[in-house]
Length: 242
Image 1 (cartoon, one colour):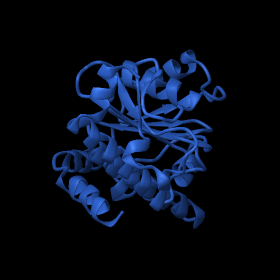
Image 2 (image 1 turned 30 degrees about the horizontal axis):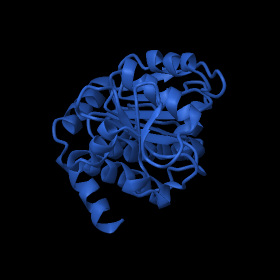
Image 3 (image 1 turned 60 degrees about the vertical axis):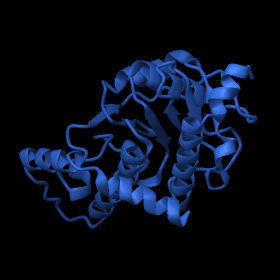
């Protein structure tokens, strides 16, 4: 760790980002969105350097604290922090930050969203529940599962397949949820899983589903994105309780 990277890592602004990223990970564990010690959350530093913060290898999300968060460069090389970085995290997150130009990148194998990646449509129907409608026009599908992301080309392929979308359903794999801020991205992650759960449960009844018109779904999406205070209040509540 160079003195420059150490100073950046310990700065007040980066300490806040580390604390928020650790909180998002603990919240995801609390909400049942984690899977072993796999999957990763990351947030870019706001200095246009390409560096970003990432959760470490080998820790449960429920135990991650701000000091466990690792600082890496645009290629996923560790710059600061005491823990190691898991290879697939380097390749997926570095590519999505660099190519898709997303500040916050949350990748999970959360149960109901992943279940939908195993179906023929591969993704959520954004004209069904109100929770699903917030994602109308914001979802991309990468239907081509290509094995573990153990090289840069696979991370780049996933990033290009996103086509700038906030949410990507990765066929036979999981999801990526992105945002400009940690609190907004986490709120989307939480409600995406709720929407996917509603769709899976509705399908399980065997009854025909009743979607709304695409125009209405688009209006609900615009309403949600037009006022994100609820997202910020949710994250503040998680900070108080977790």
